[in-house]
Length: 144
Image 1 (tube, rainbow, N blue to C red):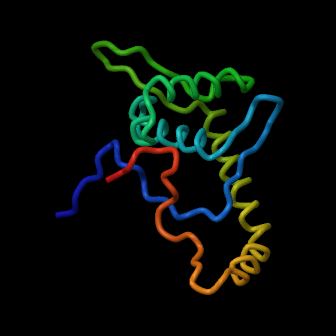
Image 2 (image 1 turned 90 degrees about the horizontal axis):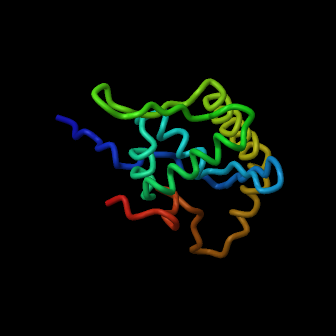
């Protein structure tokens, strides 16, 4: 019987050779962390659970979601208060569209630099290997 992945486990993602951070306006950026948070909210229905999956505190996740809501013309994340029916969060239509546009820009960027990346990798010293496996965990807690 296959093991179930806990809500706090990070999803398996293909390693990325290119990291895209878009500066949309002075002081307003959209990058891999905010995109991952949006994906987590969509998948888990909770800001707290999405943040935990990324190894960040609820406060940090909530602050990022609030910043995203303030930065765009309409909220990207809709929240419901807790109580008998439970609370939660979901992406709005604009949130889904922003996430899709970011992922499309990311894919287009990777395609645009593929030839240069291949050349640079071929120029590596013998024994050096390009990144493989999970993405670096530099800003996240260990996912063991």
